[in-house]
Image 1: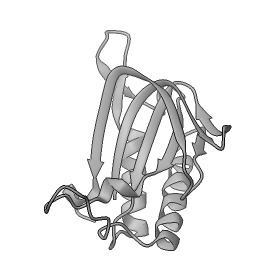
Image 2 (image 1 turned 120 degrees about the vertical axis):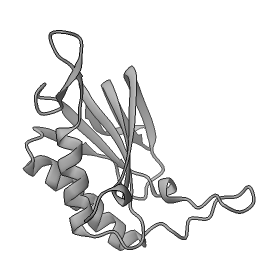
Image 3 (image 1 turned 30 degrees about the vertical axis):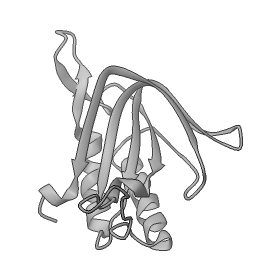
Length: 151
C-alpha cells in the first residue's frame, strides 16, 4: 500500500464539478492499493499516517502530528501509484489491486484513520474521474510504502 501525503492548508476533490470531499489544515492523501495488500497494511499505514509529525511546534520544528493540531484529512484513491514503469514508456497497472478489493482496503484505511483519532476524514469517489485542488503547505510531501515495514 502506498500513500503520498501532502501537508495542506486546504484541499478539495470534485466529481462532475461538484465538491464531494474537502479538508482544512491537515493532509491530502493519495492512496494506492497493490495486489497482496491486506487490512493489516491498511491499519499500519493509518497508524503511521496519524502519528506522522510534520506540523510545526512553537519552536518552528516539525514535531506535531495531524492529531496534535486537530487536523483534517482528505483521502483519495489513486491506483496509478502502484504503476510498474520498468519497461518502455507506458506504465503497467497490473500491480494495482482489483477495484472491489482496493475499494474495501481504501475504506478500511479511512476508517482506521478515524479510529486512531483523526476528527474529520473526507474521501473522494472511488473509481471516478476526480479533480483535486489543494494548497500544499510548505511544501511538505511524504511518501509512505508499507513494503518498508514488516506487517
